[in-house]
Image 1 (tube, rainbow, N blue to C red):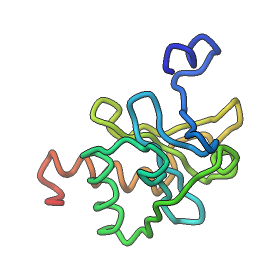
Image 2: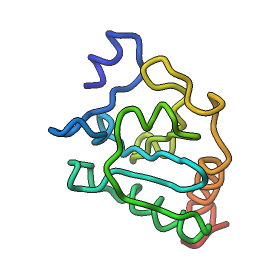
Image 3: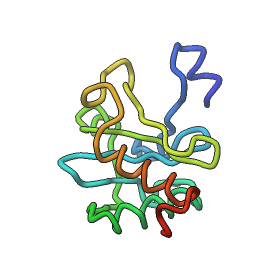
Length: 129
């Protein structure tokens, strides 16, 4: 999936499940922020289980960010305030555009930044998780 995305000029691909809903990246989980709420596809959408995903969900809740696991349409990514991918290698990587459409302000948004700081704090001892 990643190599196909790169052939079309994108850095990463996003997989859809059999019903056409967002599933995951090539090796990453996907998160969307809309109106301060963090959304991520449920495992019923074939989302990858992962330690990083679980840590992000836990940290977001500790930060007072509402988390909802629900199916996400491709179009919802176009309307999101923020989108980011997570994984062991990707850590927490903001998505600036989807299908050439800018996400939010086209940079790392405030919710993503808060989660990134809390996540990296786990490794520096600033956040005990």
